[in-house]
Image (cartoon, rainbow, N blue to C red; front, side, top):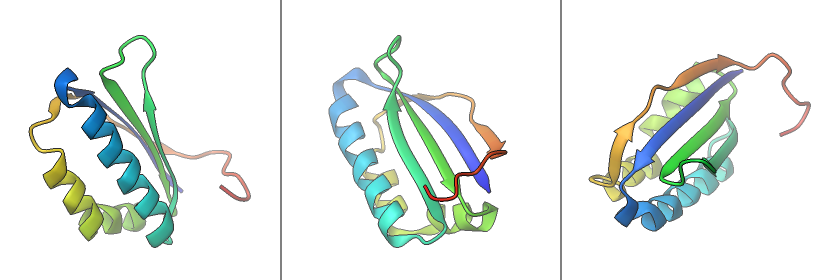
Length: 101
């Protein structure tokens, strides 16, 4: 399995719209992408303008299919100009995958 942790600092004036767009994209990803096993959108309690994505895919190929998808491209366009800073991402190997996600 292929997992990612992606924190993004969002401009405060765009936070609500960014969160809505991200949750929508996650829902579509889970529903339409067989290789997308998990797509969580979270907010850092200490830094509320930091939105964190935790995503799990069957493999790296499934992740590549995700970023090539039409709904991901729509998210990119919808959130353009909303991001203050992309913080360092972590690419993870899931060591204890659940039997069902």
